[in-house]
Image (cartoon, rainbow, N blue to C red; front, side):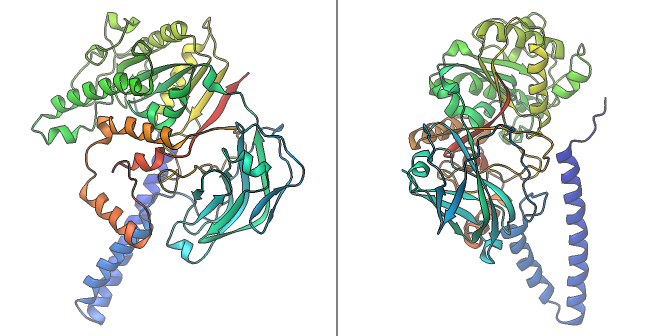
Length: 474
């Protein structure tokens, strides 16, 4: 059954079409220069153009840096008056803060000329730790800084904001979200693939009173790394699935999650949407030549409904989830956000949980959404490892979003990085082209390489913040 393309697929298609047109125009221009000026000049210009592309134009950014982010927060959001006084953020009236609030500052940011070549950022000082939050090169619009974890400095009038390669304009607007500490509750993290729970919520689930990690798929496809070891395509996919199934069960133990709370459902990667379209039909793996999910469920601590026949069907997935929800009785469920994360398995994971909850005797009080991927910006969170996470691009003011931010200490960031390092899918070396691009960007665009690992997710995920969004809250 054919599926309509996602918004991200449409944006990628448009980007690639525009890129092909640009290459054709550039090629014709180079041929003209070679004919009219000198034969060797097009070769030199082509190399320089390629280096410039890799340094400054290789990001997948599907909007203009001059576009305003458009957020709509809940109508009752607390917004105390603030002003910038020579870079110091000053509260107009005293504000009582406990330190656990999510604090978001909206302000206009305009890039300087160097900010078109080096990522512009706002530096935050005055608190216990210096922070910086980066934005798009050439930024010229409304953006949202994350001040979570800076409550004491803000209340004391010591919080300093300094633009580097950019400047701040207009009147800032502070939004204060006073929220319960979900770490004191039973938490279930829904991971479409092994490593999604760690990328999004390691800091949260490692501190929760009780945590469950439920991974929906084996993540067996795209096993070229194992094919290079001499394995056939199907054999490599099966090995990758077994390894990632092991990761999904074993790695949460690093955070202290009980082994009996780690469950791998073993459904096949990128097949959830097809399963959902025909709930009773078994949908085989794309690459592993399997129609039975049980080989990837052997490490589970207890039997599940779908173990009876091993069929990869949507109805079996719902039955598994219903049993787990009744057994764990989570007060908080953490799952992909339906509006922000475009990955098809992530969208279906969220839909499966909501469908499984319908009519169930147990209902959670809180649903928290996360986004490990974005429609519009493949580099977000922008900036370096260890820095804060500003809010992602959002251009639909019709949709109300309420952030929930959890600050992470240096030790918690280190533990999170180690958990990612244990994940087999993040261990292979990047292709040579990506390594070369990263070197060029380090030399020409001043982009730092994460000290935790080569994979891009070490830069994206090991940060001062973990950012979630309330989907449901009582």
